Image (cartoon, rainbow, N blue to C red; front, side, top):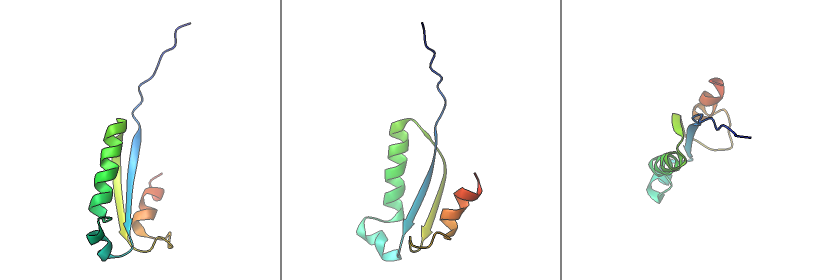
Length: 73
């Protein structure tokens, strides 16, 4: 029996967050997170459909950057 593989494109959404502007200077900033996610997505052969970011505590899930992709489902 022969199997057929379907090549469906996988989509990814990047969500980046830092707690304070000072984190950007530590190497853990938004730009570093974006570069890492973009490289991973490219290596997987996926498509980065959207990117969102927040500069806020991770304890609050009402952050605009967190809520935006959920609202688009």
